[in-house]
Image (cartoon, rainbow, N blue to C red; front, side, top):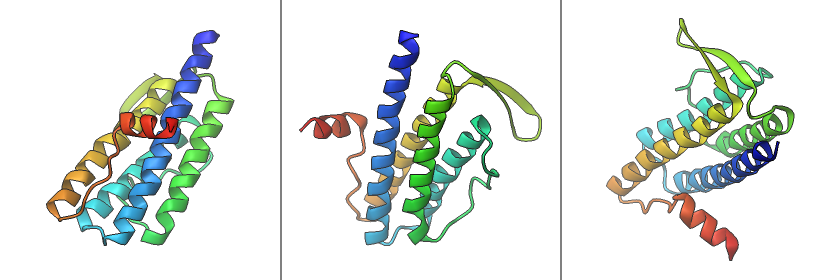
Length: 155
C-alpha cells in the first residue's frame, strides 16, 4: 500500500497545482476581459473536471462540457471541483476501477488514478490554449507550468 499512498500524495500535489492555476487564470481573465475563446475553454476545463469527478463519484448530475457560466461563478465552481477531487482521493483507492461511458456507446473502465490524472492533463492542455489566445490578444499569459509552481511553492 506504500505505492497507493505515494500515488495519492502526488495526485494531491497535482490537484493543488491545478486549483491554484485555475484560480489565477480566473483572475487574469476577469481583469483582462477574456476573449470568447478563452472564456469558452476555461468553462470547458471546469465543466470537464466536474464531469470526470461525477464518473468516479456520482454525487451530482453531469453537465454539458461546453456550457458557459457567469464569470463571477467560475472561481467558486473551481473550488467545488477541487474539493470533490480531494474527497475522491480520500474515499477511493486509486486502483479502484470505474466503469463509464464516453458519448452514447463507448463503454470504458479505468482506475481512479488514471481518471484523476486525465483531469490534470486535460486542464493543462486547455490552459496552454488559453495562454496562446491571451498572447494573441496582447495579454501576458500566466506562467502555469508545473515546474514554476513547484519552485515558487518551495520559497
